[in-house]
Length: 61
Image (cartoon, rainbow, N blue to C red):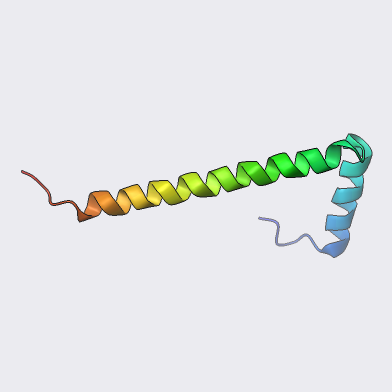
């Protein structure tokens, strides 16, 4: 998805974010994004574990 963004494009995006949100809000936004990503990964891992457990159960007919 973001394979065409190089270092200069990433720097440009960070500068725009800094201007739009300001230096005080940027760490808070990054922290919130990190926590959201962590929760998403945890939920995806739990879901995949549930699917594996369901596949291991014997099928009752």
